[in-house]
Image (tube, rainbow, N blue to C red; front, side, top):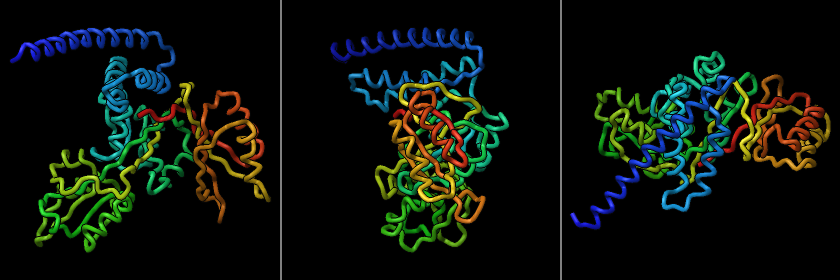
Length: 360
C-alpha cells in the first residue's frame, strides 16, 4: 500500500470517528426535544423538509441533492425512532412502489403496516392502527388515481406530506429467456406505462391486471409452469430481490421521466415549512359562469394553482367535484383570504391539508 493511499484512508477513518460522535450527539439532542414536546406528535414533516432543503442548498458537492436526502433522512429516521418507532401503512405486499415511497419519506426506522388495498390504508390510519399512511395520488403518464381522490373526499384524515418517486419498471420472471414469456401480470397503470415497450418486444403476450406490482411478482414466484410456457411480472427491482426472480429487462417504462406522486395521510395538521402546498376539494353552484367565479379569488389574491382535477361526485348524474392544489400554506394570509372567499362562492369546500412540497 502506498503512503498516499494509507494517508487518505487514515483521514477517512478520522472523519468517520467525528461523524460517529456528531450523529450520536444529534440523537441525544433529538431525544431531549422529544421530551419537551407536549402534543405527542413525533413526526414533523415541516421541520424535516426545512432541514433537507437547507442542507441541499448549502452543499457544494460532490454528493448529489438526492444522495444527501437519502443520508439525512436515514439519520432523522433513526433519531426519531429513539422517541417512537412510527408505524406506516401502505399498499402491499412488500416490494410495491408504495413501500418505496414510504421508505424514501420515513427511512428504515419505522414499522411497516402492509395493507391489501388503498381503502385499507385509509381505514388503518383513521382507526389509529398506524401513525401515517402513504397512498398514490397521480402518475405523470397515466394521471390521477381515482380511488385515492374518492377516498380523500370522505375521509377525516389530513394530507401532511407528499412524495415524488421516479418509477422504473422491470420485467421479472423465473424464466431466463424472454422469448418464452406468454403471460404478464402487473397493476393496470404499470401495464399502461409500458404499453409501447410491450407492443414492440412482446406483442403476442397476454397481459392481466392485478392489485399491485409486488402482488404480480409474488404470483410469479408462487406460480408453477406446467405447459412449457412461462409468466412474468412488471414490477420494481426491489420486488425481484424480495421474490427471487430473474431480471429480464430494466427501465421498460415508455417515459423515462415516469414519476408517481404519493400523499402522506395523518390525523393531525402540519405547520408551515416555508415552501408548502395546500390541497382542497370543492363543488361549484349550478349556474352560468360558476366555475370562473369560484376560482377568481385565487387569481385576485395571488395564489398559484398547480393542479386542477375534476372527478364525478357520485351524488348525481354529471355532477362533479374539483380537486385543486395551491402553492402556499393555509395559514399564509393571502391563501387563507382566498379560500374564505372561495368557500362563500362554493356549494362545498373541504381543505384536505397543507403540507411541505416534496423534497428530492
